[in-house]
Image (cartoon, rainbow, N blue to C red; front, side, top):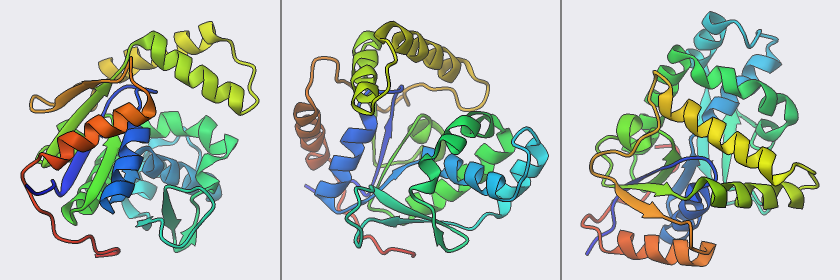
Length: 238
């Protein structure tokens, strides 16, 4: 059997979707895209141009005209999962600065920004051989994706994972604070007017609560390998 050309992975924060998506893309030789990076790219560009993050009209105009490229990580060994270029400048790591972290949330709620970036994501998806991860990929961005996965885990397990990540990064956040933040994020994502977090009707629900990263990956890979379609090779920049 063939392998699906477009794979959409959605789910709440810290469910394991990004980890599974990245390993899957590496195994298949596909482009991996965590779509949150595009919202970060718009945020970074707004900060660079001294556009007030609170000015929805200006930020939306920027998103509509911004030159963003997403490329597979073939020539770097610095731990990146893909390369993001804005105005032909490699900004992959610049998107992870505290300044962008602080400013990206309001940018991601602007309807005009979401519309502009959704179109960009669809253009990337149309090339095929892509694993795209987010919160509305199977429902809004790629509703015709060949395979849709909706990855979940209990709030407690997701908070445990996020807490360990933060401790490893030297942060002293308590578990209860992380759990509260996870639940708050779930409420926001599930109740927002634009593209709320939910599983597509034809998505496969995949619970990772009791699974290790290795088990997650092996089970998802089994699902993918039993799908129906053989894709065309990915062509960067096509």
